[in-house]
Structures are given as structure tokens and as C-alpha cells.
Length: 414
Figure 1: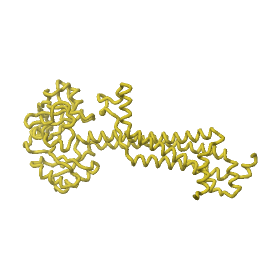
Figure 2: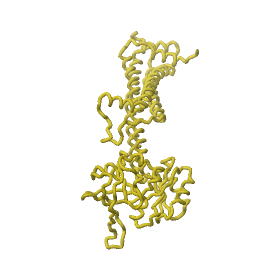
Figure 3: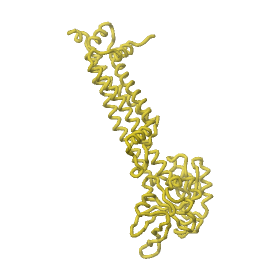
């Protein structure tokens, strides 16, 4: 089988046992370092993807993906919901009212965001029912002014099911101050825990009770809450629906309230990826030192090849092939081990916890009790491509130096 001279000799140099064992050691170290760098990048980015997925599922499972808000209270929300459901991106539409207030309990106070929901339909757009730790969401009956609070709020005030507290809601009035407080006594009927900031900043009441507190008719709501197939299409979809309904409707979506959090998470992933890429770069550029030492060690071989007719380009190709093989082997090994580790990292952490008897992630401190991991093949492709490209670039200078070796000078002391 025909093989170009550069590939044939470069492959032989890679497999051959060198007289200088130090060069072999440096070559192996470069290969191992490159593999470990690729492995570390795949595992760390997979874990970050897992955390981002958990945050998305929990936070965006609680807050509205998008809302169609009326400039005036909506007397009948169903026509708006029917219009929204005609959009293929919309999975569900339910009534929703939102207002800000202040909890007052035994002299302590805390700001809170109150969401008026329909307990019978809330499961279509929210995961709150799956995270109720005490009580029941269905206990939010109209006229009883029940409330479901977050776990952090309940622990902060020492609240349990059956306790009562006062909700203070500001109301614009014609009084000299312009704003007067409106008080409402609420009874705790449930506690939810999603393991995020929402546990301290959010509470739920019945949508009819929210209308009463706003001095509306019991059937009136502020908006229609939408659940979407693609979260990142929320701004465009909500604006399109609001525009189709005409004047009197506005669009709102999760990017206005939670967008900064997810932008920060995306930036964090990018910066950590770049820092880990430096590890791969260090290992890849160790190939430069390896090949320079190989060039010095193989000076006589290079001179003989030049003497029998090998061109500088062919000599350069020999050492580029050798360095590239080191990079390919290191990257492939690191990629395979990284994929295996990323898929099994949750199980490995669980095994360590069982063996050591210590919980690395306890639900009392962290919002999750395990180490999540989500392998993205696009990340694997980018990482492996970066390793291969840097390995190849690292071969250029040593290979060029090899091509500049003069036969007479190299053979002078042989």
C-alpha cells in the first residue's frame, strides 16, 4: 500500500523506542497532559450544563415563561388564552395575577411577590405542585385567603400550616401621600421548596382572592400566563400574540425578571471553559519541546534523508506527522474518558458519599442533593477540535527547524 514518505517515517518515529529515554518521557507526558486537559474540560462543562438545566427546570418551572398582560383587568381571560394557544409554541395558557407586598408576622417583615393562581390549572404551567412539602395546593380555595409560601420564608418566620400572617399591599389613592397600605390576613395552607431564591421571594394565593385584594370583580385577572415549547423564543412569541390581540394588551416574559441570572450562568460557563482551555494549551505546547528535542536527537537521520533526496517540505512533514499523532492520541483518549466520566459522574459522587459516609451535597445547604451532569456533544466536538488544532499548530515551528538542518553540519561530528 502506498504511503507518502513523511507519513511513513513520522509514524515510525512515533512508534520507535528512542535512545534518549527523557524524550520518550516528555512525549508521554505531553500526551497524558493533553488527555487530562480534554477530560477535565468535558467533565466540568457537563457538570455546569447539569446545574444550568436544574436551575432552568426549577426557576423557569415556577415563574411564567411569558404573559399577555391587559392594560385593564381582563373580564374574561379565555378568549386571550384561546388566541395564544393558536400559536404552535404555546403549550398551555392559564389565568394569572401578580402583585408585590410585604409580609408582617410578630413584628418581623419581609418583601414578597404574590402570584394569584388557579389551583386546578396551575399544574399545566408550573412545577409548584410537585415541590409542595407541607399542605396542598388545592387548599387555595376562593374566599378563604389561603397562601402557599416558600420554605425559606416559612423557616425565617417559623410558619407552619394553619398559621396566619398579615400581607401589606400598597394601593395608589387620592390621599396626600399618594399611596396607602392595604392589609389582608392570610392563612398558610402549604409550603413549597424548589431550592432556589424563589423559596424566599414568592408566595401563591387563589386568583379570585388576588382580585378581591385588588378591589376587582372575582372573575377578573391581570394577565394570561403562557407555557412555551422553546423558552428562548418567549420574547418574540409573546410580542406576536400581544400584537395580534390589538391595543390594550402588553407582552412580558421571563427574560425581564430572570434573564440576568441566566446570562451570568452563560458567562460563567464561557470563562471557566476558557480557563480550562489554558490547561489543554499548556499540554499541547509541550509538544513543541518534545519535537525540538527529537529534532536534535535525529539530526543525523535528517541529514541522511536530505542527502538521498528528501526535500525540506518532506522533512517538515515527518515531524508534523509525529507531533500530530501525539496530539490525536492524547485528545482521543481524553475525549473518550471524559465522555465516560461525564455520563457517570453523578453515580461516582454517590459512591464516594456512600463509602465515606459524608454527604458532599446536602439538601440543607444546596438546592440539589446530587451532582447533576448533562453531556452536550457540541461541547465535546468543540473541546476535541480545540485540542487537535492546538496540537497541530504546536508542530509547525519544530518541524520548520528540522527542515532547515544542513546535512554537512549535522554529519560533521558523526
